[in-house]
Length: 267
Image (cartoon, rainbow, N blue to C red; front, side):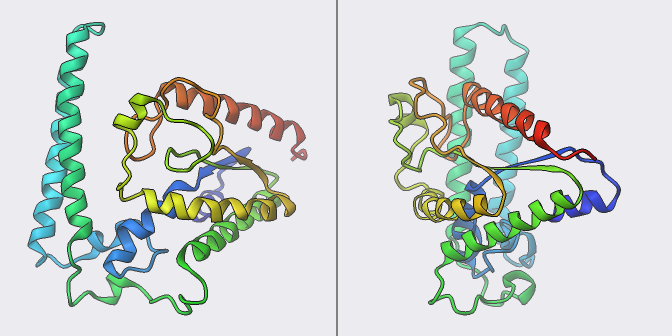
C-alpha cells in the first residue's frame, strides 16, 4: 500500500498491480517481532534493526549469518564455472550448500529465541497492542491485511489501474495436496518457526476472501494451485518452490493479468 502510493506520487504510470502475498503476513510477526515484544505490524526483524550495540551476542550471531551467506554465494559462483551437466558437480554443490543453509538456520533460530534486552526502547518495541484478549493476533493481522488491500483497490480504481490480489500457496497449509517423499525430506519441518503462522493464520485470511470479493477485489486463492501436480514443488523448509512451481504460478498470473487488462476501463 505504501509503495504503491509512493510510486504514484512520483508520477509512475502503472497499468496493473499484482499482489501475491499472505505467507509473510502470518509467518513473520509471530516468529520475529512478537517474541521480542515488538509490535507485530512493524517491519520484519525490527528488533535487530534497532537494538543497541551493547547486545554483543546477537550482533556476533548476525555477523556469522552474514558470513555464511557470503560463503554460499562464493560456493555457488565457484561451481557455476564448472561443467553444467556434471552429476558429481551438482551433488557436491548441493551437499555443502545444504550444510551452510542448515547452519544459517540454526544460528537464526538462536537469534530469534534469545531474550530481548531489558532496556528495550519504544523505538524498538513500538506501541503495545490494546484489547489483545478480545481480538487474537491472527484476526488482527487478517483485518489489517484486508484493510490495506481495499485501500490499494481504491487507489487503483481512482487511477484506472487493474488490481489483482492472490493468496500464495505454502506447504504448511493443508490444501489437499500430498507432499512427495522428497518434499517431506527437504521441505517440511513439523517444528519450523514459520509453520504455526501458516497453520493458524491462513484459515483466517481465507475467511476474509469472500468479503474482499464482495467489495470488488479481483481475488485469486492460489493455496491449491499445486494440488494436482505429482512432481516435487517445494525446495526448502520455508516456502520457496522450484522452477516448475514458479512456472505454474507465472502462467496463472499472466492469464489473470490478460483478463484484467481486457476488462479495465479506458484511461
